Amino acid sequence: MAAGNSMAKFSLADPVQFLALGFGSGLAPKAPGTFGTLAAIPVYLLMALYLSPAAYAVLTVVMALAGIYICQKAAAAAGVHDHPAIVWDEIVGYLITMFMVPLSWQAAVTGFVLFRFFDIVKPWPISIADKKVHGGLGIMLDDVLAGIFSLIAMQLIF
Image 1 (spheres, helix red, strand yellow):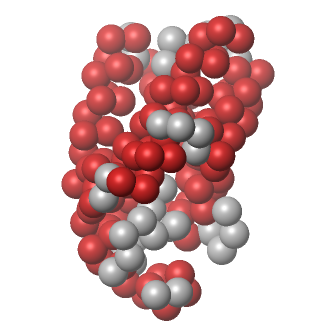
Image 2 (cartoon, rainbow, N blue to C red; image 1 turned 120 degrees about the vertical axis):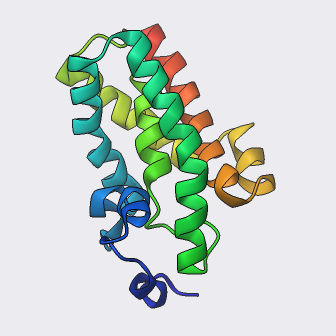
Image 3 (cartoon, rainbow, N blue to C red; image 1 turned 90 degrees about the horizontal axis):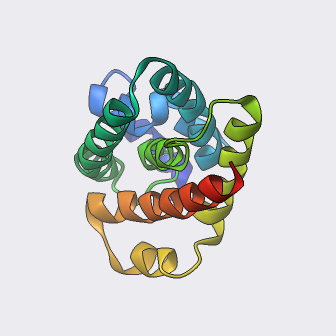
């Protein structure tokens, strides 16, 4: 099903779809994953500024686990396994990328670039998870892994 045809099945009025669509950022006509990651930056800034590292970690894990349900429900509504407009997984992946990274605009930009790189290129084992794991877990898993790869790189850099 073409992306344009399934957009009508999404509703920002539905709280689950609102989250799955990254507060609407996933509806960008080009590069929705990139726009979803951009939408993660203010979420990250709020979490980094106001939460302890432990609370940040707990909230990120809760968001990742909730993402399995959120992404599955949105994919079912769209009738497409991993519709490009579903970007909750990018938001969580970016939050993983930025865990325990000193707060700066340079770090935010570097994390953005690294996460997008790993999410797009999907090196092993990310590529295996992307191809072999389906449903909400599959939608989330490749981005969680991309976030972990990016987190490791961020820790080495910063």
